[in-house]
Image (cartoon, rainbow, N blue to C red; front, side, top):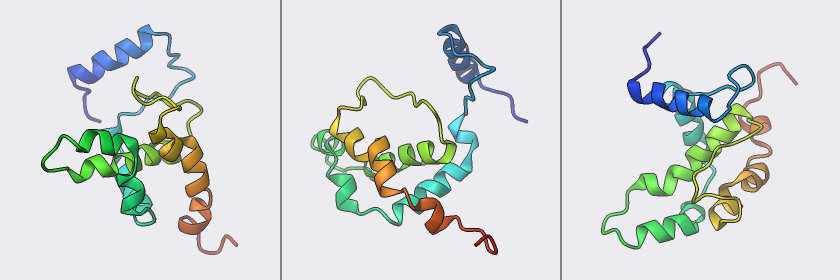
Length: 130
């Protein structure tokens, strides 16, 4: 087991101080779960580039850049992997990512439910389980 960095410990302390109950809540350090990146990759194989670059978040942030990093377009796939991978009851989002933004209308819970509702049947069937 690896020790948590000072920044991670500070983040945990802040979450606990806001009332997060450690006995009812699972907090995950994303960088320690490589399967999320694998899931992101799988989701990317069934997502078109226009559906990613058409998001308002991508358009807003990319218009001022000379060279647009691929990560800007694929970040919503990572967000989708977070939700699909853990099946959370609640998802913490940044101030700029409320559910009324076009970004969340496409890659928020509605999008994830619509786009990837057959995900487990398509990608996760276990041999001999039918």
